[in-house]
Image 1 (cartoon, one colour):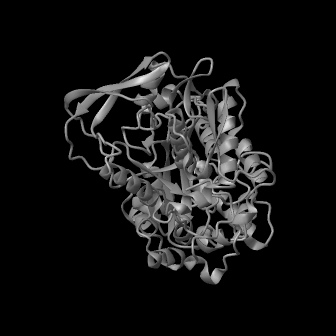
Image 2 (image 1 turned 90 degrees about the horizontal axis):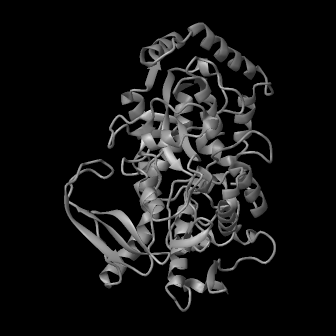
Image 3 (image 1 turned 120 degrees about the horizontal axis):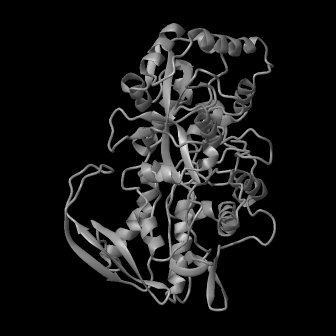
Length: 533
């Protein structure tokens, strides 16, 4: 793909995006440093050894636009797993099933934790209730009767809490003041069971919650035309070309273009006093640039179907799920003229009324900038920059063209979509949940949702935490050639092959993926820090 990345560059981008600025950011910073180092050294080989493969075109999420030191990814880093989410789960689920068959693991479904019992500073028991059977669809909410209770004792307890995105009341309670007034209406990007209950239970046991106001909610949510859970929304993963208007019909300022700065866009939109915004685009853009979040919305990648992948890249229409939303989605308007588009927008807008003249003036001014190969419009400059990257040119960024000269035109109403909790329970690098003032309480694993550039940290930090739990249980030798650094009866996991000098990355560079075999290449060719999945 022609990407040149390094540990130093990835660390600079991470720190520029995280903007750690609080006393409680000590451990988050340590986790960031440890994870980015792992991602630049051992991670790719570790995942491949477990059977994971990756789509060869690396995505470019959160592109920034504020300068080299500010927010955003300097290079594409978003790796899509071949098989998407199910492809990630498959090898680990197989190991769990094998452990069950060997009598090494016991799975207790429909057990809801209500309490963690602490004895002498450690969690020794987990208590809760047993729920009745359910026939609800995966992800759907169904009230279940309590049929009993349980109490389990264990030497080590690992908590998998999730975030708070399914609990809108809790989202609003923790809404950061820097983003203004919380939205009156939001869509849910996660099921209702992602409600923060386990965070509260662990906090009641003495654990410390930090940075609850740090969240990552998307601004490109659309109502699911076939919802599974309440207020079910899907996120558009946009390329950079759509024309973005706020609820009043004003174009968003630079660098708030599609896919550049999620939280910056959220902050801007909240200051308008409205909860929605608009994309205006055309068929050429939607075909090339619209992807949807979720394994079920990407059947070609989920089902590992190369024929469908080629159709995604070179077909005359968008993917099947995108075309289905265009035809059935309540937030989509398709028409042959801008006046019809604006009429449709006003029909479904909560408020205010949109001006055809004002929107037309802005679009015509944008299109007029294309008379030369150079211009002063920053979004058009950003599109030209994006198409310098082979992956964007192949499947993610449409050739630059006047929006109004292509038919049909399309408008999409965009909603705030809850998704990721960046704050949560504080842990050290041994995965021990901390109680004030940073004393260890319990081995803890938190596979939270993370920003696009860091999503794959879930699997790896879970791996570190599980191994740390094994050490705390007096495991004699760590698996896979790992080393434990012991000091004052504490053990710290050191990643295998941690380099003494340099970024440890160049050994993974294989060869440049040529255009002719890009869509058929083997999955050995990652040339960028593997921080997204």
